[in-house]
Amino acid sequence: MWTSDRAGDVLAALALAAAVAVGCGAESGDCVRYSDCASGLTCAAGKCVPLPAPALPEAFDASAAAAGPASGASDDAAGGSAAPSTEDAGPAPSGDAGGDDASAE
Amino acid sequence: MSRCTLRAAAALAACVAAATADRVAGAQQYLIGGSASASSGIEGGGAGGGLYRTRTRVRLGGDVRIDESPDDIFEFAAIAEIEPRSGFGADVRYARAASERFVLDVGLLGIVAPASLYGACADLTYRLPISKKTQVTVGPEADFFFLGSDLPDGTVIWQVRLAGGLRVDL
Image (cartoon, rainbow over all chains, first blue to last red; front, side, top):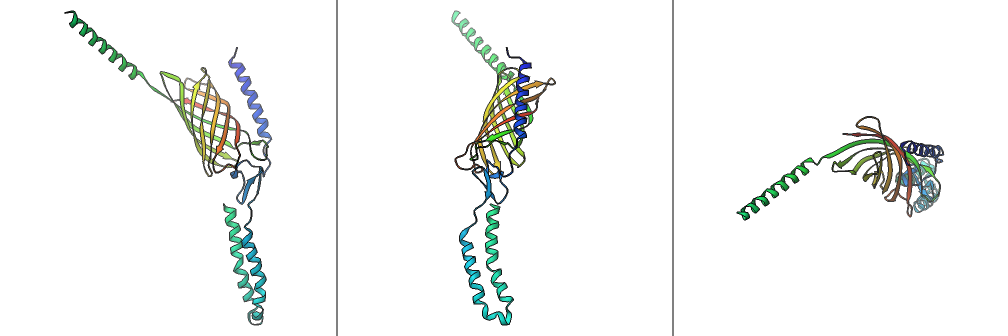
């Protein structure tokens, strides 16, 4: 016969089992939902991993950086420090901005 | 004479029936309750295959039933996930009182912010009276999430929770 005392015992056992399970919490970096991961990470195969970086803009940046010093070589004598800094400042924000945008999403 | 008597009897019967029906309808009352509970437990179903601790959830809700059918209960609630990450949503449930102290329910629930997650739930609640109108509630709950933008492709998240709280007859 089912009694309230027995019900209490069953619920106590359930509470103990849940407490044990809760005590064995997830390691950081584990996930089952996208929102389990911090900003800039995504849930893949149960782990939080960095979002894939956009490869195409990186390639353009590298080529621009390689071309920069060659084109600005003639200016080195007059304003060597100004020309390279302009070249560097141009590509860098686009690359960084892309990374931040991807992180935010 | 007899035809007139028959008509009068029929009219009287109709009046009695109408009056009785009105009285039954008038006696019908909505019984309302309010509840607050917190729950946590374990979850799984992700591609990693492991068991993890669920987010702790707070549920504030109400229930409505009709005095003529007090065992059939409609429940609704706002839910908030509070740690380790937050989320907000709601649920609606149909509950059936299995006995004076045990209530079974099934329903639909959804997390709508910051990302969506929708699924179904079922739970068993034990109500321990602590006063005439107040009960301590405790019991297991099972949730299954199968839709939403927060769900990785091909994943069904399941959760087994233990909930505890208070319920008050309003």
